[in-house]
Amino acid sequence: MRILVVEDENKVASFIKKGLQEEGYAVDVAADGLEGLSMLEMNVYDAMILDLMLPKKNGIEVMREVRAKKLNVPVLMLTARDTLADKVMGLDAGADDYLTKPFAFQELLARLRSLLRRGKAEVAMLKIADLTLDPATRKVKRGEVELSLTAKEFSLLEYMMRNVGKPLSRTTLSEHVWDINFDRMTNVVDVYINFLRNKVDKGFDKKLIQTVRGVGYTLKE
Image (cartoon, one colour):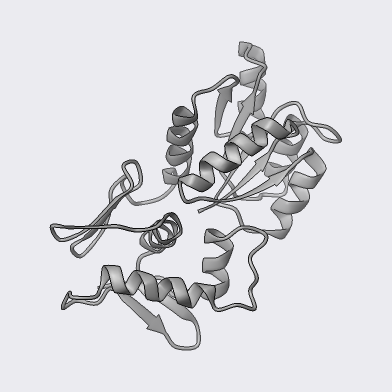
């Protein structure tokens, strides 16, 4: 899953980025409101973490513009301003959730997972056939066998399991699983699909990861 962090405090932005990357998320960072809007319009993001106090365009202005342009992205507003009036203003502007600084990183992760689940049909535990994935505990099992995945493999499989049965192009997969520095001229997506096949399908009669000719890949029974 790909996350946009709009935060002008470099230490805070670096802390969030590092933590999310360790959890397998692809993360891009914008240092001001205008840059954040520009990146949001140019790229595909599964969620945005937005600071309230930003240079050039503050978080409320960014939030209102995001909703006015109907950019469909869940937003967690993150700020040191913790008054009830500030929270109400942020939520009224269109934010989906509000977290105040200082914060526990595990709470940020839990709120982010909650945002990613909203509006989707799936429950917290993702399942197809005998393959299960728990985003909270990051455990993946095929039948009774627990699979050991790298952070990037987990992220790729999670995105595919949130889109079971849909043909997913290499471009779509790269947009949601890799960050802005991803080189689309490489075959990294195919390489990671092969990594997943060796762990998810190898040794099992039913193959779940399938190639869609001329498109990319899909996960289905």
